[in-house]
Length: 367
Image 1 (cartoon, rainbow, N blue to C red):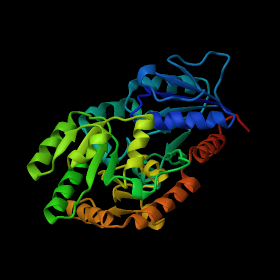
Image 2: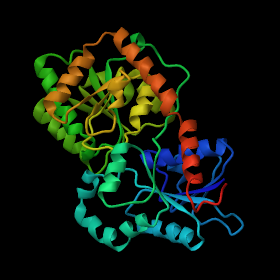
Image 3: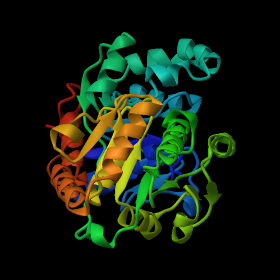
């Protein structure tokens, strides 16, 4: 199958870039002819797309894709590949990547009203298939009145061959993601302050890996000072020198080192369409705590983590329970998490599900 993915950019720290790059890599490995069309390509800060050809221009006339898969919303430039595909009778798949969540639609709503009415809603309605990553995201899409066929295909991850035992790990609770209001780090800081007052934080620390967006890191540092949580901007090696350490973005082996060092992971988001850091953390054998606003109820079903209500007290209680667990219990949870990833979230399985969804599009010419 010839598959063209389209995205405005492939910044390494963006979840959309990770999904796009890894999906292309896995699809190519399974024998598909894949290409990537980007608005701007910066090799110095680009998530790799494997063997897929990357270009800032549409494909040449001698290469006609069987399907065009667009990623994210709100960028007028995406209308160009959308219309390019429609004029040629090529089916369009569109991944909103959580941008149709109620929180996302309400955030800076005044900037979205005009593009929504002018082009975004109509373009989404014209897609042959919408791709969501969870049942929760599907509900958001349907609530906005879209009746397109939907394929629920989760984000994937790479399962490391070996991970360190818990006895060799540091007492770190790991957050990985953008430092941005939707991620709930303000709630985490308040909950950690409560643990400190109760004497339950012990020798544990929080490690925050990810880029600052819209100056939110400074806002969190100010909040931490108010509630008695110490913070620093420092590398992983110095993480025990403050209650909360911001490392900034980490990539490749440096990011893997953070997963290998921690004993638990947390996703306190106010909303998530999926939360790709959860399978990443599970792959490294970390028990995960996730807010009930994320689609991760399976953590409790598979006994590899827990969920908590979106309030300071509930998060503090969930953290206290996790920090009090012996290494043997955490180790067992981690092993169950890796088994869950192997079964549902490895990239080859995700790529097979995507390819099957493409083939099921009535207008797709691949038999």
